[in-house]
Length: 384
Image 1 (cartoon, helix red, strand yellow):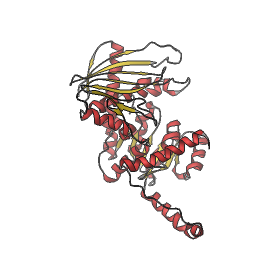
Image 2 (tube, helix red, strand yellow):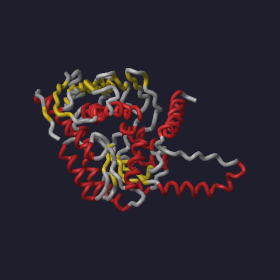
Image 3 (spheres, one colour):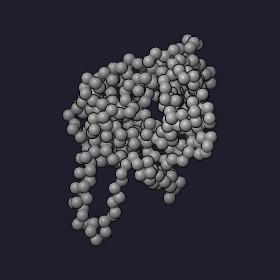
Image 4 (spheres, one colour):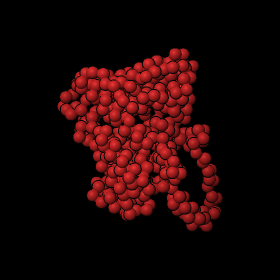
């Protein structure tokens, strides 16, 4: 067995055991049938499988890039309340590959031209928009008009107006809208929120939040038209989120500064890096930084009676945390599976999602204020 296979096997095991440990799922342990009974039970097993499929909400992934392929589709194999039912892609070769791999019927495969006809497909309940940021608004609105509930990847959109239009479209269509904020379902980040909001170490005085990686050349994330901006839109939103759910308050003012560009060709239309400070009414200060030119990954709070932090803090797995009293110890979970199952339950039970479109709108307002502060070189106050 290769190192990757060992790591993947370990992660699947940890995901299953973590669900039980966290009390997030009740897993049914199904013992394999005895060899002598397998042939007799084939129809029964197939019937059970079809019944389980029918009881789950169908999700269609719009956009089959790396995140859909490497994270969301595998996560949908682990979910209890939803399943991968359809795909939307403009690349025929991808469609063929996904149809075969995930047993997706022809009638559940769409392209960007015939996407609106998804309204007639009763097997699809939820549309998950996983496209470049600049395309989020169009496809969320089209999905809403098709009568489908929607999950939209972060950042919600590239302008405040687009976010508002998306929320309005979903309200008018009577469908639910959620943002793909997976870390609201991840135990290390939930612990940061608990420690901060419950003032376990007293009032938070300062926070540090950084997130960055080295961006390869020739990807859409460096195209302002598609991305809406540089690392702030892609990675900085995690810092904004992390600080807010740790402190439990919204910032009242922003100061910011764009970093120097070391590669002006690669970052012709977007920033290479940007740093900013968020001020809070309770006196707390958060210093943040995001970059497409260096590896950064920390969420740290300094409080009156100690500290608590995650490093790394925003990745898909392998997070590590500690406090001034010792190490954090939580299982490695499939937060995307937890995120999608939570939304499916919200749809089924007709209850609000904890990561709604309004939260996405709020964060885009903050991102725009950071850009404004950096461009104007002045402190920008936020009104809520």
